[in-house]
Image 1 (cartoon, rainbow, N blue to C red):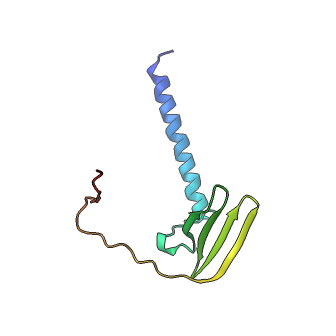
Image 2: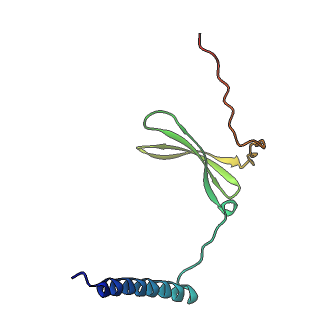
Image 3: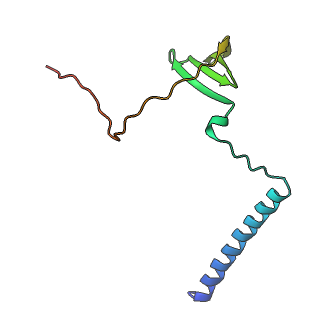
Length: 110
């Protein structure tokens, strides 16, 4: 039962099955059945810009699609489009200092 050749057969069979899966995926991609689908973060067309919880059951969400933004009210009873005429504004990236440490200012409690 503890024959080392059984373990070698198991490892060889596992490697063979993994190689078959890889070859099948490569063949599917080569024949066009699977698309590569590589998207960079800034190529995304759809995203959630901001979300705000109104109460326990309702939430306001700004959704960006291409160069337009939409304000939606999400609730258990459904979704409501509040405003669809919002032009997307480029949000500036925060300026980072050269330091890798975070400084937190606190007030003393007396």
